Length: 84
Figure (cartoon, rainbow, N blue to C red):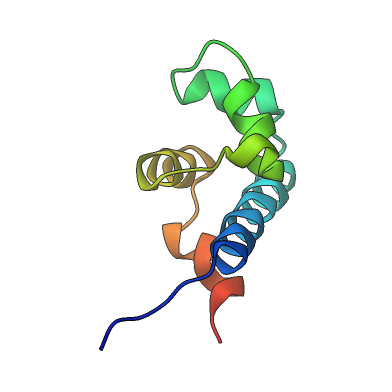
């Protein structure tokens, strides 16, 4: 059986994860710049774009792993709102 995934469905996944990152980043008191620098980036462009899924920018698993370590949270929290 081959699963079909719509573009809209996958966009919603990325948007939900981005908003969850934003929620936990703010909860832990990190600015976008602080989190970005801790991840090894030189600007906020990735964080600001991926949190809002701007221009299709989204977090990959490496980003989420780093963010979870920096914010001291379990990586699974990024996926909790995706459970059906």
